[in-house]
Amino acid sequence: MAKILVHVTVGPSDPTKAALAFFVARAVLEEGHQLALFVAGDGVSLLTADSAASVQGLGTGKLSDHFEAINAATAEIYFSGMSAKARNIAPDDIILRGAVPGFPNKLVQLIAESDKVISY
Image 1 (cartoon, rainbow, N blue to C red):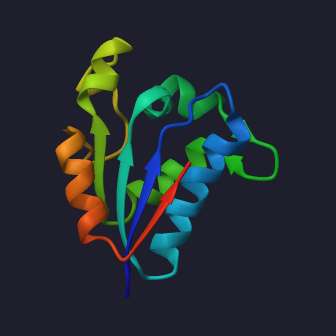
Image 2 (image 1 turned 60 degrees about the horizontal axis):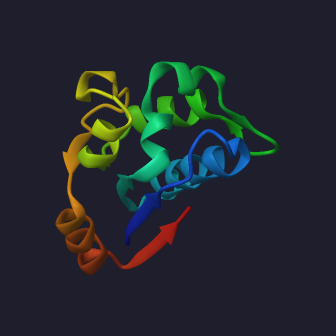
């Protein structure tokens, strides 16, 4: 079992890539690997209920379906506190279960601890 970090910075303006990022994160869990997820930049906008309900990628599925699968599993989930604050997204607006604010040093730590890193 590998620890795989999925780092998401793409936002709702690219729904196919955005949904793909979480589709891959979901696949990490389904394949029995340990998922670490760090969402930053425009990606934090995806973590709200409105985005989850409206973002759907071409061939990459509905964001809400991927969130549901990720919420049903155990994963290490972080979002950039600075990115969220800059976009007026409060921690209570984040719908991924167990997601906590993280700063760049946490991202660096996750990269160092992971076997593989995938960025979107």
